[in-house]
Length: 158
Image (cartoon, rainbow, N blue to C red):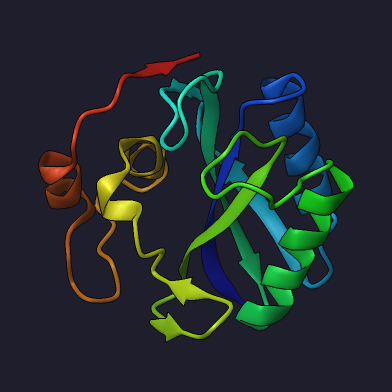
């Protein structure tokens, strides 16, 4: 089993309900166990203007699935929640991103881990630090250092 951290986000169709439903679905992923989830946070959207605020969180799970098998499961959950991939960084019912997968560094056409933009997103780093404050990324970067260097975006615990 490997420890995995998943970023969750939604800004359409009752975002808090979307995240709670996604957590329930993640708890049913085969060969995996949902361990815990951070608090929910409200954040300013990145991307096209005029979007509603997001609700974000980070979940921690153990899995024996391969990274691509887990990605397929997460994308299936997104699709079941009405996720459409029409506008990059556009409004969405549900976004599930693999942030970290054990100590792995993955550079695949479908998946990059650690998530390539997580260091720029306080709505990822702060919930992750809530779960694992002393975490170090696979490249050795301490999470607390990333948080200190991260651009501040309006972020409020719900």
